[in-house]
Length: 294
Image 1: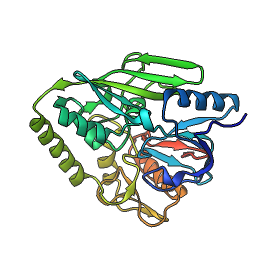
Image 2: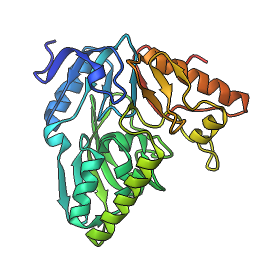
Image 3: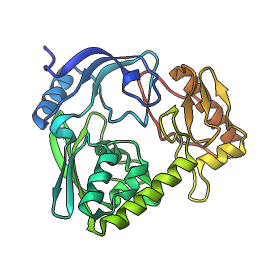
């Protein structure tokens, strides 16, 4: 079957991820409407191809060998941001940073924490992303999820949203997100956002290629960053990748790293955590023939 017009072959995934590693995707699709997205998913199902959705690529590590499937990035109407009273209706491909900026200008509060999450609305729903005490499930009214066999709508309960995960299935795409917010003074919102951005700049590495937090916090009273710092891993390097000297739950591509270098660091981090009786679960999504194998 001929692929839809929005699909192209052999796309370098290193262009799609913030960490800047990874081999080519067999297929890459950039649908701009729900209809185009449906066509891509139906075609992929007919060809028995796996589908992965990439937003800003900030929570993703792709194998050096690439990905033998279809990578989808939402664009056009699927990345829009509109207001509907006290709600924001946006495409799954809309960046959280842009949503926060619009919400601030509209005087709508509740999504301020999104300024600290370098991702899209759809990815945030899939992972129930959160920061500074807030989670997407706290403000999600409903989301439209599209798969090869049809679509469904649901809120946090229907989508099984819990700490850093949901029941959005592989191959499904969060195409639309509706956020229920509260009216507030735009200046108050702006100051809150500015404070969160300042705290993020002070606590996390800046001006380096990274994919965000590597590990989920193992316990409410113990962060992964603090644990790995206690393990002596700040600045630990393999090849062109290193565990950030600023925050031990971040891996930096500081010198032409490969995904294999990053995985080697993750294996070392998990091994040292196990020596302290802690089992780490990775937050970063792995794509292609890649795994920790420990």
